[in-house]
Length: 257
Ligand SMILES: Nc1ncnc2c1ncn2[C@@H]1O[C@H](COP(=O)(O)OP(=O)(O)OP(=O)(O)O)[C@@H](O)[C@H]1O
Image (cartoon, rainbow, N blue to C red):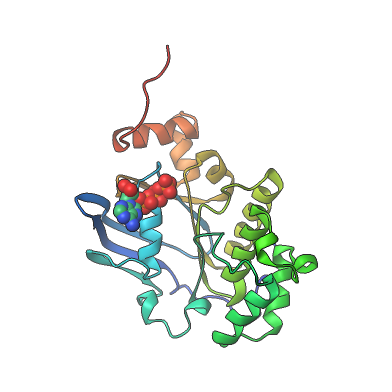
């Protein structure tokens, strides 16, 4: 359990689930997301797994209103994210760790976001502490390592003390310490009752981080299960994942004999 994550504004209610209803998206002739219906519940980490190109990022962008679905809808706590009065207080998202003004310090970046989102300035130092950037908060973000940028991205996600967290491949490029840190942070946030939805194509990492799994391939739901259930058929988790997704990739090479 990670302590001190919340700004104390009250923990999320059970209403704050992510609900995808028949969500679909095409880019030209290519189907990216295909009739995806899923409920992501609070209090656990839900891993969003699928091979490269299976539609995970597109789904997350649609939840955040950054892409419009061709069909269906994505709701957070029963409403579309774009209808939310204070989006940063509703959903904390980590999509692209590089998206900071390189000349701005981490503290200045967070302070500007707090000011424009009706978040008390005192929360800035709180989140810097949570992500371990207090000592370097005055440095320009452009000088940060990938791991530090990732931590700053997590600080942004936590700034509004949201009930729902959405993270797209948060461990990409992190060293083992950073990976363990993200894992423990996400588990702590879920233990506080938040809804934590985290995408990855790394089944072994998800096995350590997630309680529940949503597995997709070619934009379609392949399984909504628990880590224990997926590995329960006698296979290793990796074998079970490959079996599940074997018909849903375009690019897998043949095995060497
Ligand atoms: N802006 C876009 N324009 C055209 N095609 C896109 C666009 N974004 C995604 N796609 C296509 O949609 C499909 C799903 O891509 P998406 O990035 O959502 O998958 P992903 O599961 O997140 O993949 P990865 O694990 O590699 O990040 C892919 O075929 C991709 O090429």
